[in-house]
Structures are given as structure tokens and as C-alpha cells.
Image 1 (cartoon, rainbow, N blue to C red):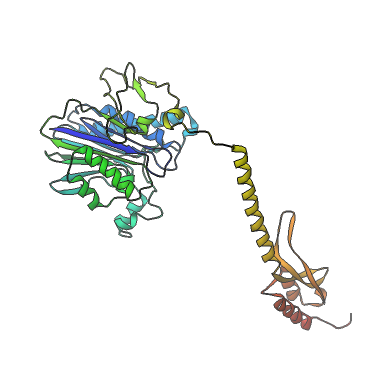
Image 2 (spheres, rainbow, N blue to C red):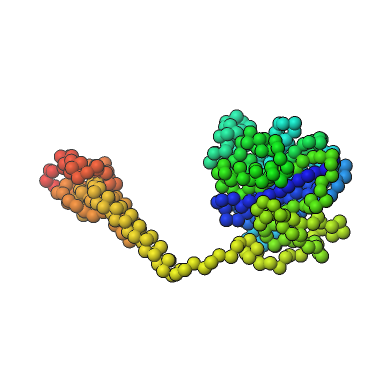
Length: 415
């Protein structure tokens, strides 16, 4: 049997850069999602996909061994990057891999990207998320629906980071003609419901389904990058012009190509700016034989922007607004503090202070307001200590009542 496939990645409506990478070929489907917040997640995902795409050739009998080996090599490559540039320490990525041998799929998985199987009208999730919220679901503490809005829904427990060398989940299953495989980043599965995905996957070509899944994810409010790969298992050979597809950060960043290789034309479909078409890795290229594309990274990743007008004036206006806001806040705080009162000691006498019983470096937030004739030396040790520690009052009347109480208890006998 054969795979008819399509792949698309979109940066989304919130993120400035795409940290997803994906690859679809005649034997291999894979999605890697750079972990949000980590250092250069786009570099981690593209590095992992570049290592994993070497699997895109007819597998031998040990299909899971090949998948595991490729995942470990991707992890080792990330470790090499960190060793070469310590500033990349902390970079990491998820990885979901589906390797096809014509009769079965071998799956490797780590993180929260997902693989699904749509077979005979039913959609089944194949992979199990390595996330904090998934552990809560497994324990029965929250539902799948609640996990979509959980404050820690993006907390990954396992990823490829070149440091911890986590073991991926590995399993295989037999393929059937008519099967549809869906591999995606959490920008899609974290937004769309099971029913929505099943409905879109129920019809159309792989290209149509992939585009619709991305569109539906964005319209449903996804704030993440969205990457979707859809592949059909068929008895019929795919069209001769169906080439391997590299999408997302791996296509946007300067690509590491085999020596003597060349990048093909862009995928002429939806959002072609995000989807690149590349040739498979030649069999005669030894591991690690790569050269960098000389295109400047920033020029390759970001479209040119018109310089802003009057930048100095704009900065001055922003600074003036910030200073004005700071002044308003400080004035409001000072006004409030001058309506507060407390009782404390001053020059050996019980004194009513106006302000807050606290000080900032170089700034006193209170001052003596009424000095009384109640002397601390004429109070008991307990009362005197209480005054020295400061006694809060809701208002001036309560402060005066506190002073009157101590005045009544002071020792007035002559020395």
C-alpha cells in the first residue's frame, strides 16, 4: 500500500514566529513542536525534523528500532547544538513520528503533539500526551474538556532537550486501505474537539483536510502555531508529482541541505509561504554531511517592515505617559497614607503618628502628628513594649482613644 499525504503549518494569529516543524513523505510522517517559552524552540523542532526525515525510506523488519534510533539521534543532535552554543541550553521539542512500511505503522512519541487514526468512520487518538494535565486526566481529577482551559495545560513533562534523554513511547499497528492518519501539533488538537476533527477528516482529499483543520483551529481561537499532516493509506500509487513536504520552522529557517542538494519549489497550495517542498535525503550522503544555507536567519524568518516614522518623538511620548502614570499612582498612594494613623513612641512619649508605619529607603512614610504627655517610663514594661512596636488605628479618633487608655494606666506617683 501507499501513502497519499499533505502537510501545512501556520504561524497563527498570535505568535510572531513558528516553532512547529513537520515533514511528510512516502514512508514518514512527523511533527515536532518547539516547547513554548524555551530557548529557540524553532531551532529545536527544525533540528529534530532534519534528523528524523532520514527515516523516509522503506523500513526493514525492525520498524520500531529504526524509529527509536532516529528519535535518539535527534536528541543527540540537539545536545550537540547546546554544546556548541551554551546560550541554547533549555531548548527542547516534542516529536511524534509515524513510519510506514506498506503494511503497518511504527509510532514513536514524546511530548504533546499527537497522532490519530481515522478508520471506518471512527477517529481514535493513538498517542498519549506527556503533560501535567494529561496526568490529571489519567487520575480522574479533570476531564478532557477541562484540560483545554487548565492554567497549566502547556506544561510538558517529557521532551527532546539533549539533556535528559527521555525514552519515547513506541508501538506499531497494522494499516488498512482507507485508513487516514492525522499527525498534528497541540495548536490543533488543543483547540478542536474530537468531534470537530472527525468531521473534517471524514471527507475530501488529504490536502483539503489539512487546510480545513488549520483553518478550523485558527477560527476556534488557537493562540499557538498550528501544524497538520494528513495521509491516506491506499492501494493506488500516489501521483508522480507528489514530493516530500517540509513545513513550519524547518522550512522557514535556513535549511541544512545534503551536500550538492537543492531546495525544490514551494508547495503550490494554501499558505505557500509556510510550506516548502524538498527532495528526500540521498542514500549516499553520510550522516552529518550538511552545509548551511547562506541566507541570513533574520531575513529568512521575517518579512521586511517599513521603518517607523519619528522614532525619537514616539519614545518621548511613551516615556511621558509612563511618567504621568507613575506620578498619579504615587500621588494616590501618598494621599491614602496621610489618612492613616497609628500610635508609637517619640522622644520617650506616647505619640500619634500620621501615615503608614513603614519606611522606604530614603523616604519616611509617616511623621509625628500629636505628642502626648504620657511617658513610656511611667508605663508597665508590657505597655511600653506594645507602644514601641506600634499600635494601628482605623482613624484619628481611635488613635486618641488608645492614648487615653494608656494615660489612665500610667504611673503618676512622684519619684
